[in-house]
Length: 173
Image 1 (cartoon, one colour):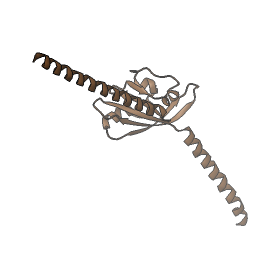
Image 2 (cartoon, one colour; image 1 turned 90 degrees about the horizontal axis):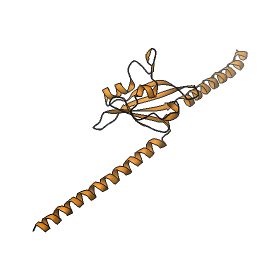
Image 3 (cartoon, helix red, strand yellow; image 1 turned 60 degrees about the horizontal axis):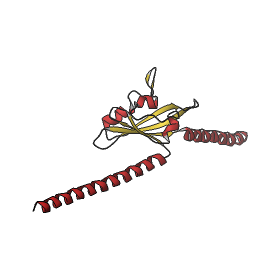
Image 4 (tube, helix red, strand yellow; image 1 turned 90 degrees about the vertical axis):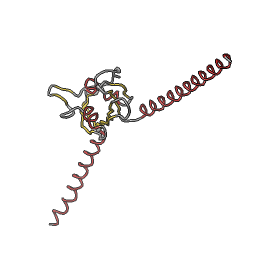
């Protein structure tokens, strides 16, 4: 009877261990999928824990952060270089703090970041709180240089067309 009971306990423990191994395998697969998604996006992504310490940075964010991969645990203000002699460069209040306080509403901000070569880049930043048990936030960084160049091109084209249309009309009048 003790042997049967012992075999039953062993079978139960083996079933639990097998189930735990399956869950670990599924979790590893999900983590690999999320890492692939984060690293394949063209926009920079920086995730921070509750105390604004960096926990994840994707590949697209590295050039925008001056070309270095920040160590896990570094403060976001050091990574994003958002503090200057006059205080915060990104607004009156830290975007991560605002996102953590609001929890449901993304916080939009304009940042200026400096690349490795010293070039200043206009960045559109969207801060959002992360859902889940642990408090944290994520920022999506979008390089605005191409959009601004396209806007300048459009404006100069419209000015040229307007001038070309006005010149013959002035002669007629």
